[in-house]
Length: 444
Ligand SMILES: [Zn+2]
Image 1 (cartoon, rainbow, N blue to C red):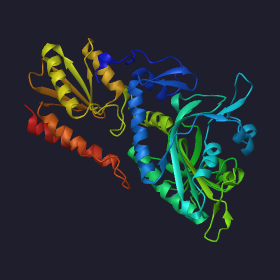
Image 2 (cartoon, rainbow, N blue to C red):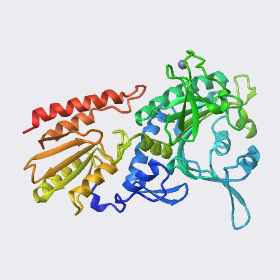
Image 3 (cartoon, rainbow, N blue to C red):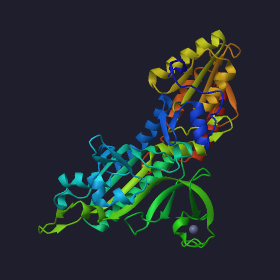
Image 4 (cartoon, rainbow, N blue to C red):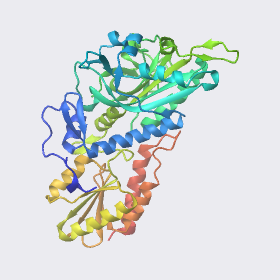
C-alpha cells in the first residue's frame, strides 16, 4: 500500500475533545473518523486492522465447530415484544417506518437466531448445534464515549449454541472459555475471565472477559496469585480470593467479551423443541458468546502505545513494514524494497512515497505503528537499509539482502496456533536477539 494513494493520512494535530487514548490516536493516525458520538467511519487502514481481528476470532469460532451466518441488523419488533426485550432493554433502538410499523436495531440476536433454528433442530440427532456471526450492533447509549470502546454502533462476534442437555452445554461452555483466552492472547491482549451476573434473564453466573485498562468502564477485583477475577457488582464485599486466599486487588477494566448460560429461556419463548429417541418432546439449552471486535481494536490501542503513537501487536498490525525513502537514491531504493516485499504479500508493507519531509514521514510511521520501520537514504548509501522496531529505540543499518531473512523470521511466527498461548514477552526478546544477529551478519 502506498501512502500517496490513501485518502486519510496521519494528522499533524491530535483531534480536540478526544477523551481517551484510542480516540486520539486512532483519529490522528488515520484509522477512524468520528461521524457522531459513538459512531465511527473506518478508513482503509482501520478496516485492515478490523478485518485482521475478525479473522483471528473467526478462526477460533470455526475451530469450535460453529457455522458462520449473517443475520440482519434491522429486526421486526414482534420477537422483541415476545421476549420482553422491547420494553425491558433500555438500550434497544426502536424505529418506526413511514407506515407506522415498528422495528428494532439489533443489540443482540437471541430473538432472531432462536426462531431461525426451528428449521434446523427437530430431533436429538440435530444437537448440538452452534452458529455465529460478525455483525454491526446498535445500543442506544445515553453517554457514548471513550472512542470506539463504547459505541452506539459497534462490530461484534456473537455465537449461539444449542444443546440437548445442560451437561452437554457445560462441556461446550468450557471449550469456549479456553478458546476465548487463546483468542485474546493471539490479539496481543491479556483478558481475565471474570465472574459477573447473568444479566437480564439469568440468575446464573456469567463470565466477562476483562482487560485491565484505566480507560475501562468496569471495576473488578482480581487475584494477583491465581486467575480468579470478579466484577465488583457481584463481589459483595469480598476481599480474599476464594481459590487461594490472597488479598484481591481492585482495577479498572474494559469488557472485551462475555459468555452466558441462557438455559432454556429463549427456546421456551420461541417454541424451539426437539424429540428424543422415544419421541418425547424437550426444550434445548442455549449459550451465547460475544466478542467485541471493534472494542478489542480500541482496547489494543489503550494497551499498546507510547507518546509518539500506536504500537500494534504483529498479529493485527495494518502492515509488517513501514518503508521510507530519503533523498533521490534513497527513494529509489525504498521503492525497490517495497516492490520486493509486496510481490510475496500484498499487505506486507506500507510505502510512504509522499512528497514530505523526513520528519513528517518518521512521525507518520510512529503514529501508524507498524512493527518495523525501514529507511533508505542517500546518506546510508546504496543497498543499505536502516531497520528499527517500533517498540525499541535501537536501529540497525544492514545490507538490503538482510530483509529476506527478516521476512522469513517474521513469517515463521505462529500467532494463532490453536490451543497454544503465544508468548509475547519471549517473542520480543527473540526479536532483539535476532536483530543483533542480523546486524552482525549484514552490517557494514
Ligand atoms: Zn487466588
